Length: 158
Image (cartoon, rainbow, N blue to C red; front, side, top):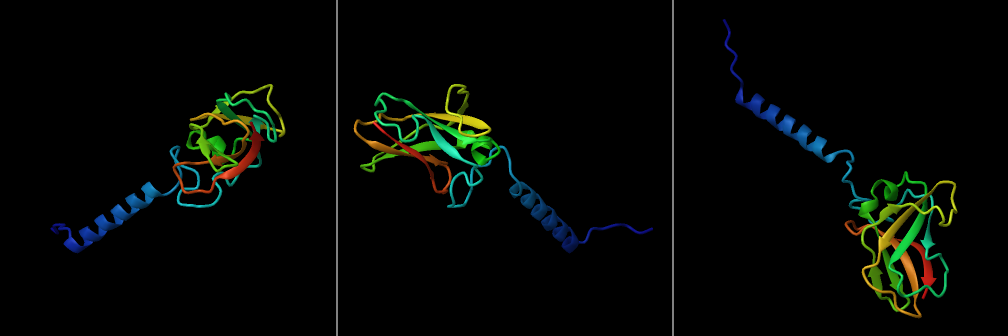
């Protein structure tokens, strides 16, 4: 009768192989908690098919300074913005290089909004500050928890 005794070297190799597989499985693939372009400095929503300002409209002049939300419209929702909306915000930079950001974006319904695309999806963010009079604001889509580069959405003036 033969008695099985694990060899210490074989056992150590097996444990190392199992731990490597477990670590690789934990690091690979996406999850619902993914963030846009992790570890990348490319544009924050690289797979979008078009994004524009909705409210205020791009190029709009005389926007009220008491405006407290900024809304954008996107072409479809199969991009990172559509999949991970709460990972994005908007950065507003005026012509004096002052910045106001919104909170994280949320998907909103806007049946009376502009419809520049075949499949319009609207996203809104609430400003964390006040617009100043007689300024031109450039609005950028940003993913604040990454090092991706924010992308210009449009401009408006107060």
